[in-house]
Image 1 (tube, one colour):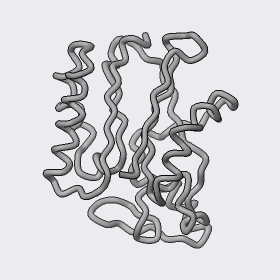
Image 2 (cartoon, rainbow, N blue to C red):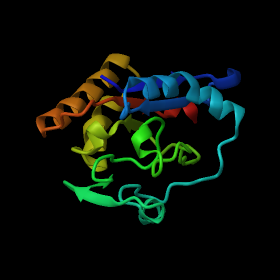
Image 3 (tube, rainbow, N blue to C red):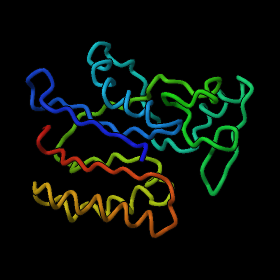
Image 4 (tube, one colour):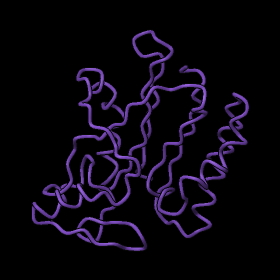
Length: 183
């Protein structure tokens, strides 16, 4: 498995600050291991640019234009946009043979967490290629009623199993984070 993850809580002694990440090792395990071990340090060293996602991030036309302007092409395979007909992400670390089109600068979304934000699902494309956002929320929500880590793990396993049952042969990593502790 090439996926890796990181979960750093109580950043700089503040229980309301944390960094979570799921890293898909497209070009091999080295890039995902590097990101899992170092990305939090880099985020703390540099305040991330105010680059906000524009709602739904699948099939973003501005990313497609950026790739095509540099000589690449974007093709659709089973409903997923792919660079050079292969890679399903346009931002990542590693993937040396896609270096001309894939950029390592992360995209971030900043939002203030309030009472209506129950949980966050972070997952690799092995989940999102087969399970919609709403399906994932509907499956995870009943498991998020308590703080039991075992219950959260069961929700993650259920999501992984659903993706596998729908034919995913990719690595699948899922992280479920209750948000009330950060309010």
